[in-house]
Length: 38
Image (tube, rainbow, N blue to C red; front, side):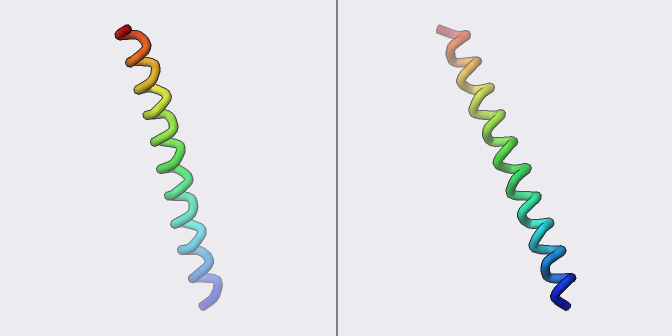
């Protein structure tokens, strides 16, 4: 039971990490396009 719980917990963490990386790259991309337009 505990192994199953920790496995789903790890999956949730990995999802959050991926989401954070996506938002970070999106922010960097947004800054680049904004600077390019100026």
